[in-house]
Length: 74
Image (cartoon, one colour):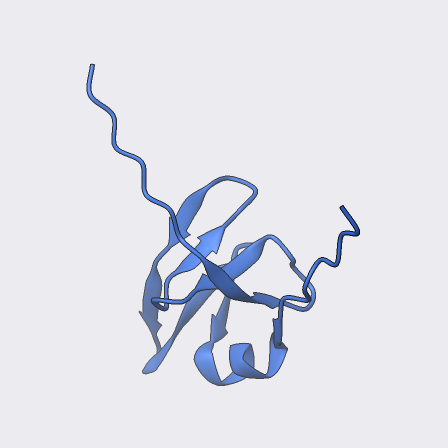
């Protein structure tokens, strides 16, 4: 049995849905399920299907936040 593992580093996440993150290479990942989310073209808009709803890139950019650093004293 062969296996392949890929590691992504992510910088941004959605304000309302923290399990949707964007990697440094621009891919959207659902960290809860571990799946890549495809970019979709819908009614002349480009966006993503988040929680079953289509959200365009212009609306998503307003909802993105930088992931805060985890300051652990150890």
